[in-house]
Length: 221
Image 1 (cartoon, one colour):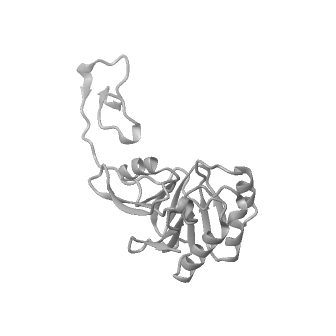
Image 2 (cartoon, helix red, strand yellow):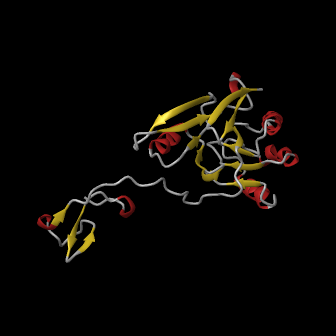
Image 3 (cartoon, rainbow, N blue to C red):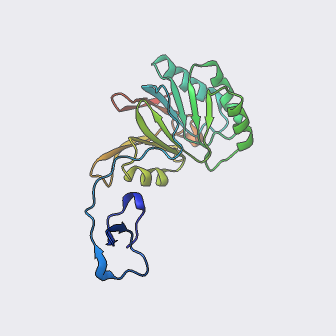
């Protein structure tokens, strides 16, 4: 059996050198290597820095700039210094009003892609205040490893790895916070802020996250 080198739980030794299973060395040479627990992996393209302790988590603004700004303003009043948007921004202009706030903004796109090039250009011109990560993001904020995607099924799978302290998603327009059991025998925070724009009659919701105490409060506009 061949597993990834960073997490290999079996293999063989040949001439005193430990190797993964490979053609040319028979099963008679195989020896089991004791499986150990690995530390949480750093983000593949992690974004870190002077990390905020409180964050605004929003999603599915669907071109509605006003409710997104209202959520960001409320979060800033409560001490948030970063905003995570879990997708379906659509138009880049939806994010422009956030320029008036002292928030670092991290954005992924969703199934309603919108103008990805405009998002990238807006981020490039923001002097580091806006980060457009594409379809997913791996962040380090407040000393916490965070994974962001638009899709709940993908978020649930990533939460199950145990590699993150917090996994955020959107898409369903239904706000929810759960502790997802993971393969380490622990639980990972899995949060969905719903739709900040109140799309299709859903409540207009967002989440205030406290990364120091790992508390997540669903707020309604």
